[in-house]
Image (cartoon, rainbow, N blue to C red; front, side):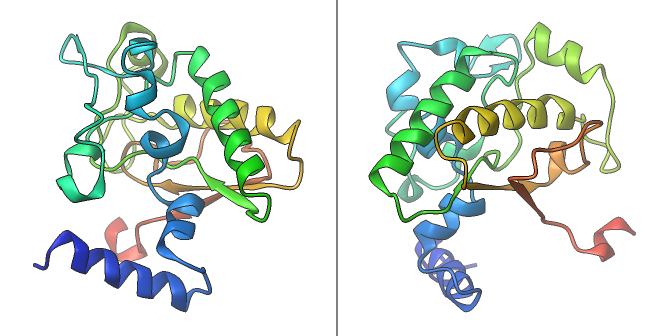
Length: 196
């Protein structure tokens, strides 16, 4: 029931106990990073609106002003259009720039944003095919993890020793129907009691 800043401090302390150097390191390893590093709205909202999801028949473009931790949870309610191939090249470019600026970092997060908000464009819906996962949510795993694999392959051409974390939950909780790149380390966010 605390403020977001109080919760962030709890998470930061937890990360330090796990031997992660700081909250920002945690976010870059396994946290919600799509709108922060991979496809930030302030960079792509005008130039590439197709990177953002179609929701209820309309393109949803998150505002750059809303995209920060201080504004509450609104910044998390979207995912990119995983069918948009050009987004892969831009994500690869942004991650490579990050590693160039931070050569000591060994990882980067490719985790989906929080609170669902997956794209409902024709291509994404066709890829999902109406299938649901064991949580009775539409199963975006194959679509998302194919996108992840392509980004990882692109980055590894320039930085072959890097690792990529992500969060496996909600619409992407189930493993894909194909192998993940071995440089991808999913964090499963549900404990076994949830399965009951």
